[in-house]
Amino acid sequence: MIRLAAASLAGTAIEFYDFFVYGTAAALVLGPLFFPTFSALAGTLAAFGTFGAGFLARPLGSVLFGHIGDRYGRRPVMFASLALTGLATVAVGCVPSYASIGIAAPVLLLVLRFLQGLGLGGEWGGAVLLTAEHAPAHRRGLWTSFPQIGPSVGFLLANGIVLALSAGLSDAQFHAWGWRVPFWGAGVLALGGLALRSSLAETPQFRAMGEPAKLPLLEVVRGHGRLVLLTAGALSFGYAVFYAVSTWSLAYATDRLGVDRTVMLVCVMAAVAIMGVLTPFAALLGDRHGRRRLCLVGCAPTVAWMFPLVALLETAQPLWMFVGFLGAMLAFISMFAVISAYLSELYEPRVRCTGAAVGYNLGGVLGGALTPIVATALSRGDGPPWGVGAYLTGLGLLSLGCFALLPETRPQAAAHPAPGAESEAAPA
Image (cartoon, rainbow, N blue to C red; front, side, top):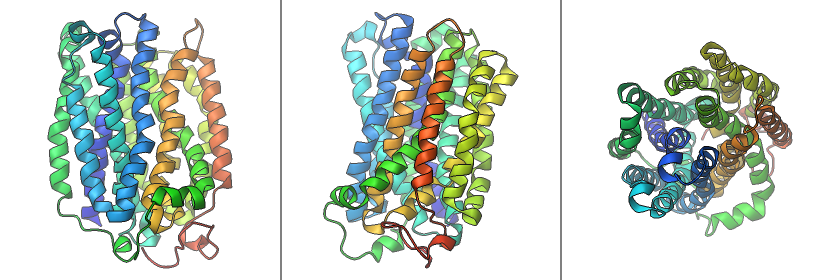
């Protein structure tokens, strides 16, 4: 389990590194480089639009790779998705700017971002299920929390490299070539991840499954459609909170409040680092008290924190901004620490790779793709961006309602599983 958890963590960290480095670049440099004919606000919105394209591709990736995972095994998904995302990320770092090739530059950027999202849409399902289907039921939350630490590690790695380059280079150097270095580094990381995963075995649940589903997506739509919609709605708020903190706040604070980008990166990274350390401890609570209960307990205070988050960001003081970010991240991880185990248990094995991944990534479209764009549009006035707080609060209430309608899945609740949910009476 330690080897499996380490391989899953490393893979998701690399995949999310690829995904996050684009978000940071979109917030800091892509607007003027690839959309120079736009105003500053319109350029940022356009850059966030290409950022959102990756989220739109993620459900398609979950369908494509979910089909492979449900028919041919979880293991092939982990290799193909990592290779695709790594290649697309390296290619982003090679795209010439608008000044060099004109309109072809943003078009190439959009295509490569789409391919990034396609790969990431498959990565999560493969990595999580390889861990979940090997783990004992009573500690499934703990073991599957390691892939969930991957996004924190990927974020810190991506932003740490950007921070080092930002501190060590002049603005002219950073805009000319420095921003490309993190994208090129993705190739080295992808090769390392592929090597680490080469010795992993297929899951016992897949090997014992019998005849696989011929059309997993069709079975998911027919038998689990309501479950997919509820999980997507439930997860959308967590995505929105994370990307409001990690992406929109960078652009808003540097452009509107005049905060140095290095200061902003440090504040966000410190909050995410603490969140990553506490993830397995939150997952243990889910093993003890239930996945759904922990999600409800985490979602409610996160909803209440959205207006204080905006107020603390508006101070432009590093300490208070950090407090705002930390509060949001700690409440967020109380939901997402157990999501890997929760979604794995909600879907039966024959369609699990498709169902869990589609629900997870549709939540990313609702929360992650739209939030930087909507928040940037809502914050263009002169005063504090209270509209952003209202938007996040409304999305949080939607998620709270969806979590309330989902069933519990921890082993103690398995005597009467919900339709489509796997019984937890026996170990995985």
